[in-house]
Image 1 (cartoon, rainbow, N blue to C red):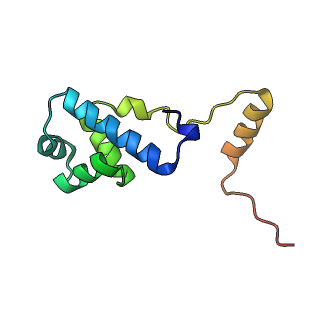
Image 2 (image 1 turned 180 degrees about the vertical axis):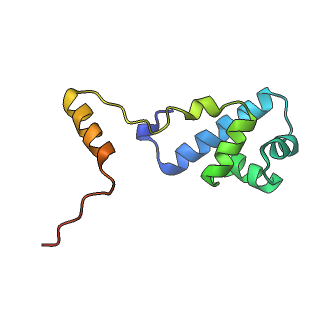
Length: 103
C-alpha cells in the first residue's frame, strides 16, 4: 500500500495488519505478546483490530516483536538538496518555532 495515497484509516488498518502478521509469524498468541510488551490484552487487541492506539502501545509491541529497528527511520528529516541541508541545519539550531505574524 502506498501510504501517500491512503487515508488515515487505511494507514492504521495496514499497520495493524502488519503487527498482527508479525505476531502470527512468530507463533505468539495475543495474550503472550501483550505480556511481553507490558500491555493489557485489550490494548493489543485494539492495536491489531483497528490500529487505534497510543504511540507508546505501538512502540512496545514493535519492541516485543523485534521490530524496533523498523521505527528508526520514521520521520527522519531527509535532505535532497544543498538548500534543504542548509535550512535543516538552521532549523536544528532554532529553539522555537517562528512567530506568526498578526496582520
